[in-house]
Length: 362
Ligand code: HEC
Image 1 (cartoon, rainbow, N blue to C red):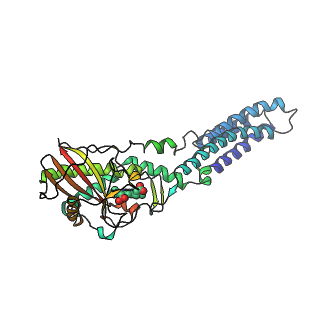
Image 2: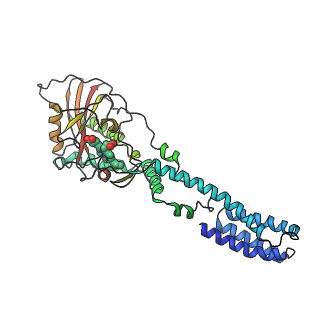
Image 3: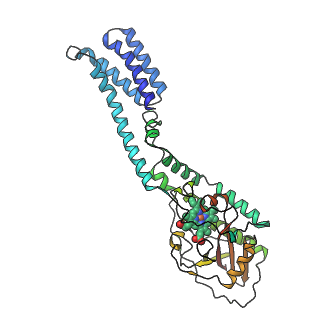
């Protein structure tokens, strides 16, 4: 666009010069004014009208100073330099901000942080779990905010100085603010800290038999798990994923609120990790799972309920639930959808982990 605007300036000068030579000629003025109108219109910018207006003033002043200044060139140079100076200053400011944001949201490699799913946990969902899995996957795609943030981050990284100078921002459409701003990137990612675990661990007698929860309960638990998982993985925070080794603006998964269900009150949600340790472990934390805090958190072995619950999940089910009076416990599978695979590697359907819930009836 810089080159296009320079072309228009040359055209303006081409018509201004005859006026400078014969300021009294109304025909030459007419041609110049017509050319100024047309170029201003075609350029769609404020730059060319500004150059044109200053040239009109310069040509108006020219007869008065003609005796002392030998050519019209210095006046024309001033008329061009002022608008270009302003625009360059603005462009330099935008460019500096752009480069600052590139440093604030650099590409980072996530392949070391998120180990590939283990083939031992390659357990694609079956039956009802598969339907649930498909609908969770499409819910992830219906997220305009996440899309907007990743588009901004892509623009931030895929443009360089040359495209920046030559994009419509330089002079043409100058009034349109630069599209990628710190506010826009931050505004879409702000959310609360991970809340504390709402209740303390519930005594659980391992010797009592485990009765699977009735189907009515399973429906409510499925919804609770789906809502909670969506909040935890937070697609808004994924950023721009070029590939596993180049991700910009990623925000670690964490809960922002305690998931709610009509009949159940969440007491605890713990993450069963399947990726980082040789066998399944439960991360210990007094907060709802937040990956930034669980990296170095202590772990415990699965208890007998969790170990039992993992069996049907490894066979393709999405949850295993049991109820004893007021208390329900269930484990919900966390499987890799096509979107998760972009960062986590492996195959769609792989188990990435599970949440172990303890709930109390309201
Ligand atoms: C933009 C990259 C990215 C995407 C997309 C992504 N994750 Fe993650 N995930 C990570 C990283 C990185 C970690 C490791 C923890 C960390 O460094 O924050 C992780 C960790 C996890 C963990 C914990 C693993 C453990 O045991 O420590 C689970 C579970 C998980 N992700 C599930 C998902 C699911 C489910 C999806 C898709 C719905 C998903 N992730 C999409 C990057 C991503």
